[in-house]
Image (cartoon, rainbow, N blue to C red; front, side, top):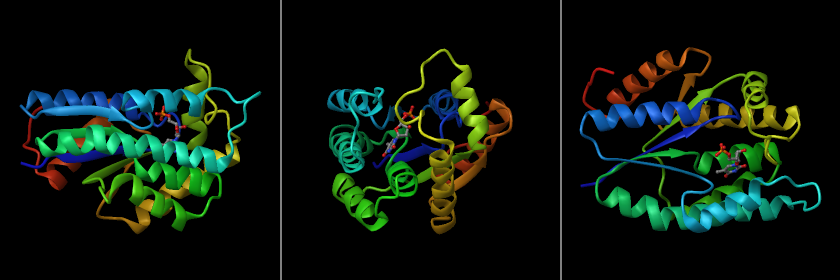
Length: 214
Ligand code: TMP
């Protein structure tokens, strides 16, 4: 029995974490076996890579291509160690970021070559695509102000310029326009509960998840 790979994407502060948690509770309450994971950092190796990628950069700058390759390395390990085996035993995987993040951040944000990123994504995933990607679409300023208002210090990528984050947002818009059957845009400006309701309806339609009251 094959599982499903459901990915959550969006700019900083778009609300992925809360929606993934609510989605997990909903799916598990209907008896579906769920794995929640993320990129970067879904494996032991990936946690080390995440630290390297996101720690603040002042005295240790990370070159753009190095950054790209580290995200790809994290993904290759994650696909082999977590995604493929769990899909093979029928799990529903809720994954916080996947290949579209690299296109949006390293492609649109940094300006690296998109064809090259597509090739690298293919090498890292062996062609494993999401069954469905939920793009939580929030205004960049709103997302960043949520981050700035939280206790945690901004990480290396969150600290990028507003222009960078706007390019990332444009990247997601382009990706959603070119992949309408795989990527579903969800307006992230509603309340948590309202957004969750929309996501559940999308999952019911796209993945035939049985209707369960939330
Ligand atoms: P998050 O897990 O808290 O969303 O943080 C991950 C950060 O890494 C976020 O700023 C987006 C960034 N990122 C990339 O730049 N490229 C990638 O391929 C991935 C997976 C994440």
